[in-house]
Image (tube, one colour):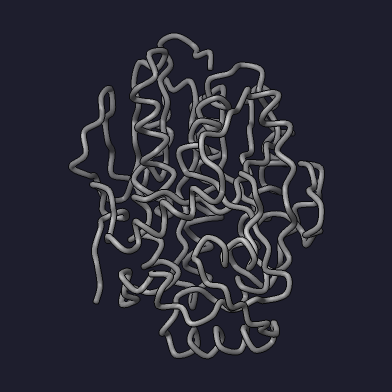
Length: 344
């Protein structure tokens, strides 16, 4: 990866799953002069060349332009997954806050904006072959996560037309995991009281096989390398799919977990169970997101490999193995969102 010498990079959402990987790699890059990490809560973590600022992008009182002044690139990662029962709250952070970031990039005359979009921005698509970045990004409207990601894609369309001098890059990664993200993601999607030690293959009597449940995964560090390439290469612009092989389905999970018995579970039955748990506030992940996952297309990542010279270091299978170990061990990182904790 070739870096612009002496680059100053600002990262929003710098203490989360992706942010911790991006900040660490930026701090290790000899071509990066300084990193400014923005987060609601400043961590004790002190990577080299990195300063922190406490910022809530949802607040109109936050002066993002001041923080972005003099930056060569802004990598926008900040995102709120919860509360899933209050989509107006996530909309204020994710959409209105995201648009506030875009406006501040223009006001501060930052030449490069790298935005964390997602596979969740894509319209429903095929599970038997991969699509490239030209696939429509209208999301699944019933799921707040997809609706918000798709809306920001449209906001960036307008932004690019109004600010042609800003090089805009949209990263569309698959589901991102690493060992250190296990505790955070358990809390976000499974609930704070879900025991991580229960994520042991020998405790599974069978594996549910749900039609359409075939998705892609990616190691967070591999995604972070693509983010750095996008931020520091002067010619990269547009959208880039990011995912690892092989796609994850019940057959692969059965092999990974050593669970020989797979039981076909109708979509409706699975959704009803999730909806009941979500309605009782026992499960943070909503049935609407489950609906979206069943419809997400598989992504072709040739453009990232070719134009960003992006090389994967982990297969999807290795990613899941690492993540499951992290769940069992209560793994985390030294930031508030990523704190490690076992339950049970």
